[in-house]
Image 1 (tube, rainbow, N blue to C red):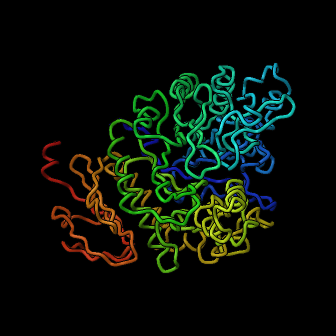
Image 2 (cartoon, helix red, strand yellow):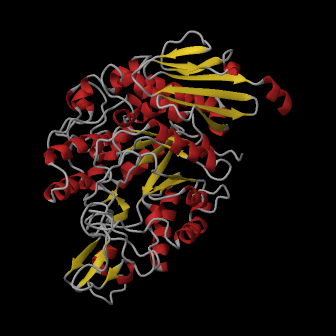
Image 3 (cartoon, rainbow, N blue to C red):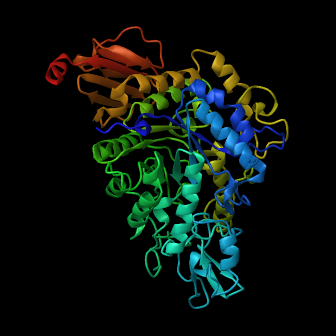
Length: 564
């Protein structure tokens, strides 16, 4: 297998607004990030992925960009950025920027011009259409509720926005748009950044004619059929030729609606497009009748089937990205495990073990390494996320979901769960700010914070340090093949990794019950590489404790002779 630095790396995602505030205005900023780089170096991560820091009116927390080559004033200046980048590189780490080019802000200079008149030179930078029968051009719904079309009185036409009405979609069929985007990307690469995470990149190519989508029963709008559009691979290959291939970069595409066959094109090992993709099958397993707005739990059997399919079917063809949480997902320990005080730590360690031992590049979302949990939001007034606020209004006003049920679903699934401030210590506001935080701090910061965990050799933080260090020491974790065992069990996730003579057995108990596991004979004389319980010796018939995780390593002498 072709070895590269980004396959061997561990990535840490920073959500700048919530990471560290240096000036007391209640909003995280670039200088705050710079002040905490030694913490990330101590953790052992190799790459920092920064959610957007570009100039933005902040309708969708920076994913609505008004100037791609300026820094959001709340976050600091370009000088602050340059200092941060230099400090990251001085510590031997790399920086990946968020690239948001499916849409811009409606305050971007291109769109300000575009809406002025039908014959404006920038008109074709966006998707403008005539209305149909006095209504929107088609039945597509926005991902943030309501129609995907906004009427604009100036020219008596509609523009497409798959997200907020302040996020008009760019027209990638226009070669001038692509040239502008590639020029901007080259500018950042020449500044010295090390890669891009590409926001909703699978949506950039729309179906010609923008036909109506299929309406689900009871839905107010159709889901927009834009994922993996007809020219998306053509456009990404052009991007690769014009930008990506000119630098030593790490690239990952956020690919909503991606299939394994499509992923093999996006992240093909031939390097013509991207290095890897984010797929979402495993984080949509608990969806219900109203999409994510439910309190259903993920079935372990379904989770294993999904994760294993991506592990085995991409093997030798493309590269996986490994994640359970990010800025768009609730806290992983609350969602996939148990955040009750008696189980939270051991459960956070188990989930980390299960994920980090797989093949692919692991992503740690800020606070995940501390075992941070979902936040006990009481009312909609506690929320800041446009998706959550709009969904509450739309679904409760339409009588689809009762208000008290919707609040329960929001506490389980809202994106704001991941966006509460980083819990640095047990001082006021968790050490995040000396001002009033832009969103509430999770009240459990007194018990869950970096200050305490860095001093505790048995903490979640210390466990993550060991996991990350192991990936650097054991090539079998990075490059070994994957095989699922015990596919039918609803309590255990068990799999192996194999590279030449080296073999790992990974055993994870996903329940709060003790359970039995019969260790295959070959592994009984192995050594415990890492585990989240105090296990002194291995037995054939093993009684696993609640949320126990165990990784056993053996050297297969017969395989060793073959490879020698």
